[in-house]
Length: 107
Image (cartoon, rainbow, N blue to C red; front, side, top):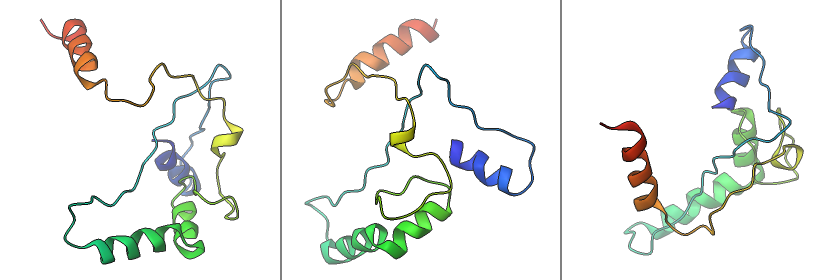
């Protein structure tokens, strides 16, 4: 995870984060409230806090990409990266991925 490397660089490690000119992948970290939760009010309060300016400043302080454009980041943001295209429409393809993985990596 690049955010770990950025933190290590900040602490003096001799590292460099390089994004290939051909593109990179992005691993989004969605947040959601399940409709079956027993703590909907607390869950909404948490998400509201994380998305607030204060919460997003903490996100950015951890070398992650803030979701808000009004929060400055210490790192390159999504709109500054070349992201490799995906072939997925966002629907679950887990069965096909597992089948291919097993075919390639198990004997």
